Amino acid sequence: MDREPLKLGPADLVREEILALRAYHVPAATGMVKLDAMENPYRLPEPLREEIGRCVSTLAINRYPDPAAPELKTCLRETFAIPEECDVLLGNGSDEIIQIATHALARPGAVMIAPEPSFVMYKMDAVVARMRYVGVPLNDDFALDIGRFLAAIEEHRPALVFVAYPNNPTGNLLAEDAVASIIEATPGLVVIDEAYHAFAEKTFMTRLGEFPNLMVMRTLSKLGLAGVRLGYAAARPEWIRELDKLRPPYNVSVLAQFVGERLLAHINVLQRQAERIKADRAALFGRLRDLKGIEAYPSDANFILVRVPSAEATDARLKERRILVKNLHGTHPLLANCLRLTVGTPGENDLLLAAMAESL
Ligand code: PMP
Image (cartoon, rainbow, N blue to C red; front, top):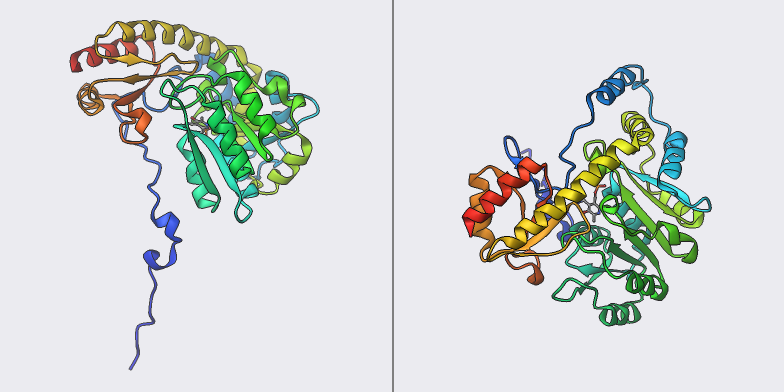
């Protein structure tokens, strides 16, 4: 008699720590005012879109991309003043660079440290790479508790530290001196994640020469190319050489390389949009502060964190008004009743404020 061979399912075969993970949730956004994902709300000017459209038709998409992407790297170096002595790593979004650095440094027993709350993918990638993750809580006002952070470095001797600068989801820039002392004290690699650099006045890019264990990572997503998926990191060649071995060779497509290059040639367009968003952030912040019952936290990014009496009630009212924001309640004790609001167009910000006011 034929017997069915014994089959094992995902519950038997997938690693336990992955079975226990929750997937990064992206809610459906059709027809919504989308203020949940820190996107730039502005499209490109029509002539630039047409130019890109025309050129895309000439690209050889039957060929794999050049994995070294020399033209794109040259454009990035020139546009963002990447120090000459550093090499550049390209990612399919900076998400991929976080993954690459984590996997490269996940020797058995190795530790990753990051402030908390911060970008959730640091911890998620640590779990997947079987790296031990240690989160160091920020103070109640979301400033670094530098004594506690340095003590954690001393105790755990991390191979990898992530500091988002400005921080997501709190929006603030952690104190530069404190971050510098973290880089100095860390025995391993420190990645300063400058995803929101376009909206902040500060950077560690100019300080790469001071620290042999520093990597500065950025993305073009928040500047207006979230759909293209292009992130980059700069560090000393000996770091990039090793990390580059983990990069899938064709991770940045022909289309992404081309669009990246074209837009870097027109970076002033994106920078003007970022300036606009910064001005609108100031206006939105002032008006949020005027609403009774809301605490709005100062931001150096393109979003504002607020605390409301009931995040659930406010989020529900916003959804009724077809406005999507990020409800952070329950994700970390410091974020009780917090919502993260991406700065939209002035019209979108008006809709948001009106719905927030109704919900209080
Ligand atoms: N770092 C931080 C701090 C972020 O908030 C994000 C996106 N939310 C990323 C990295 C990843 O962005 P991307 O993959 O689009 O470059």
